[in-house]
Length: 385
Image 1 (tube, helix red, strand yellow):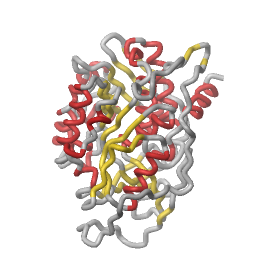
Image 2: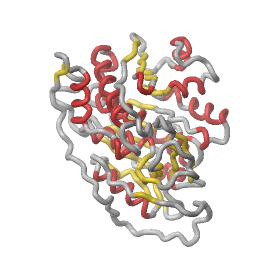
Image 3: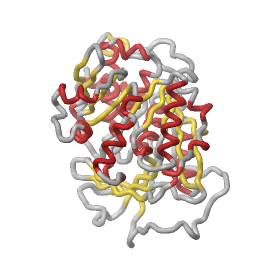
Image 4: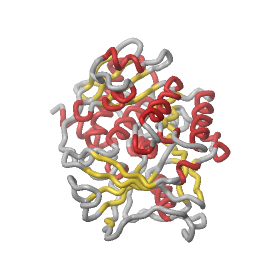
């Protein structure tokens, strides 16, 4: 399951600047050393305390259950020692990341069908990332390579409890430069679920490409899934972030937010107050999910709401936990959208998703830590025995 990560030691300051003199690469594949990935397994019937798991039985065709993820794909540099500042960290592990890409890989690891649409630099990191997606059984035909911009980098500070802070190098990075004319609309129109975040809304031309892709997916009958994934340092101001995130709010059929994001979007109101949360529930929304870290999640639909407990683990790195949760939810919904109307089956799907998130925080990095379906089901069985 795990990507064999390289360790980088830095003895000088990392600088960003013009791209003059950057070596570009012709179309080729750069192998991710030591990477292995099991082939996709069919969805099988699993019984937990006498309950059939959502999505059990004969699955729909891969084509009809396709989840297309749109947005950023980048390199996360994660300190080898937690609790230190970036300046104090003695070394970093590089790991593939970027929320929408994490979700795409997460779905494939769970046995689902996924594709990624986004842009990376025509550089060593960009080709490595494309290859990682391919080796994880993610359709990467919608990826584009920019010869004039580099693949985005993010340095992640890990606190002792596994929580993190980010420093981004993307001024501009290739993901910001995706144009509407570069979109693979044929792939987008095949999506049963189209998933995205808000980082692709920050600057043009990617913002227009994002809106065009979401509209095409919606017009083709796809369910739109939105995880704002707030990263304030990337926005020009808090107000622009709030306005940008909410600008496409009413397009989504499914929205996942964290407690912190609720407070941010409601300008400081209590994220544990249902009345506050329901201010974010728009008339066409089918499902609103609120993640609560190790405590699990809350869910809200037009007809029912509730809370599902999480799985307690020792957190090493929380990077990618929310993406793993989203992958868990979407992997089940892509097989059976009627879960949105069936509370008992939705709760089972959310238990599964909570375990996906919990297992991810037990390893460093996002994509390397995403669990397989077998690992999730084993953890669920252990938790009820």
